[in-house]
Image (cartoon, rainbow, N blue to C red; front, side, top):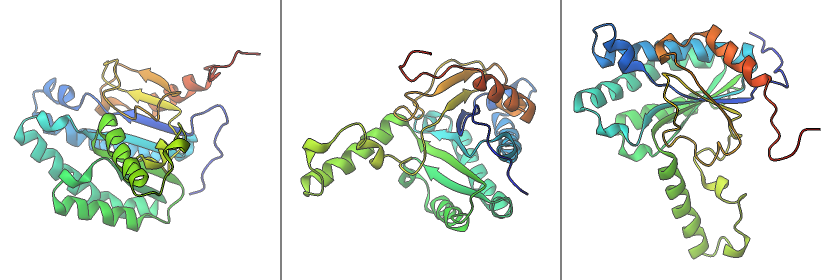
Length: 241
């Protein structure tokens, strides 16, 4: 399928904090994992919608460094869901020309899941229609700390002059170093906080906090949010003419 040209007024890179799966399930008298499965199905719909809506990069927050505090049952269920999702969706992503990347500290994840993530990245490395980035065991502060350790090693080993370090240097050490910064960050479920997501990268992003729970976040709602972004005046510190 051919990709429609991106509107210059629309966001090139959209990041989404997919919140509300548990509450969606509980409101229906179902366990929280039922909501996470519904949320995974919603991801498929939004991924499919992106190219036609002019979105070239989509980054989704799947599991944070703080989510390990949830019950063992929920965490184990989420890890199982991630494995099944990768296995089930990867061939579809190849067919739809979607490149998949993962960000976050993957070394706390179990080896089988890490292997699947690496295989998915390799299988889709040639795809260009949409860049999908999935944040698993990700936290913005953790990402910056890991980046600083790598930067410090390069300084200590003589590969980097500390006098040359500026705000253009650190992004080269971040998990997102091959991605453009997000233009728009959306959080579902009515919560108005960023929850340690893409802290450095979102310095100039627009934010949209909406009441809709993630499993109810349809393509039409997504399109409306993107249209609202197009009406904003983005000055990046300058003054409107």
